Amino acid sequence: MNREIKFRAKHTHVMSGNEHLNGVWVYGYLCGNGCYIEPEEGIEKLIDCDTVGDTPD
Image (tube, rainbow, N blue to C red; front, side, top):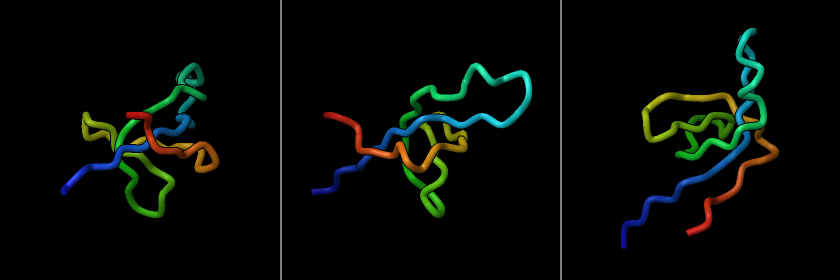
């Protein structure tokens, strides 16, 4: 059984002008050292590692 496991975490946006994105839940795949999520769009986003959890099915 091959099941892809997706995760969710809160986005931490560090660019000025986009502060409104801080704390927004993002969904996707953990990559690297676990401090990034690659959403289905293929864009990597910096996340708050303390908020990582699996997505409810």
